[in-house]
Length: 451
Image 1 (cartoon, rainbow, N blue to C red):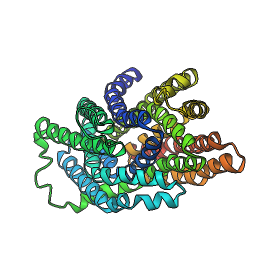
Image 2: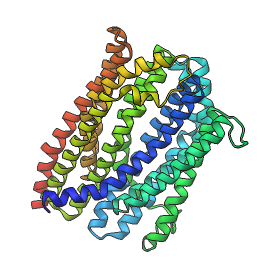
Image 3: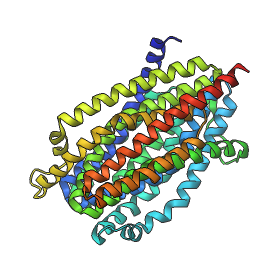
Image 4: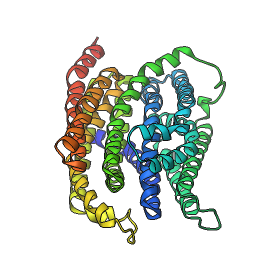
């Protein structure tokens, strides 16, 4: 395939995935906006609670993400049996993980207090997590089915299911947070109930589509029967992905904890700025998923040129998206932040002041954040997950978190310093992961395909 053909293929596959990630992001964005209009205390609590949920979710999603390259490779090799087996065992592993971590949500208040959060914020966050926690089961199953569908290039349905979920979330939030349309005013609890409803609606949509559009795979037939070979295959590939995801997302979670040490206003500003930075990241995440599918397809075809050309195109599109994000964050910081804060909020000016400085720092890591997630997507596509796990742990925890603490508290740069730690960690990860893909991995695959 030519570079132009690769570009069309990545865009055709990637745009619905980008749209799906943005629609999923809109769910969290809706929570943040509505809770920001409800009260700063509620916003700060859900920033912590949703971060706690997301950290555990992203850890468990490693098994779901592992399904994507395995299904893409099996599909390219026309191996429908393997395709079905790995997807089923991805669901098994996801349910096992979700059941294991449910107690953490029930006792989350004590854990958050130990991490230095105020008693009021920790209690509100625990109220949120006790309601939303059971949603981990459908959330991870949805992730498995989305990976399965994306690998088969059924990406439009991924987009539309997520859009439907975002609409449900918006209406449920409006009704239950504020007590509109005759519903009780539940505040943080209302946001949690809305999130739980979203997970259930998303799972119903994905299951219905898989049964109706792909009946030949009989995906849910004999689902209760174990397949230990496929189970081991998904576990070996997915566990390192989960740890890698945990390393990255916990870098941001650690930044939330450290911002909480600085007070409610810095934490609220951090939550808003992180939402905006995450919106830009959704584009990169969609392109990375497309890169994983294309790389898995190249593996199934044993075509090294297909792999390298597709990678170059995906990285070029990532750089373009990163450059656009930098411009938007630098030119419109106050306008973006203002969407999240009630005009009558007494602390509005203070939150804006902190938020603007954080967005300037966020602009610094846009390109590198895109580069590291793109490299991860390509490496997952070629089933290389152990080395990236080690690189991520070193970059984020041994470099990023200590730098954030040193800049923020030892040097006294406060919130800006904490975020500069993010810049350092992401930059180191991007450089090392890109080297891993273009150096040892490409070379070894060329030798393997030529043999």
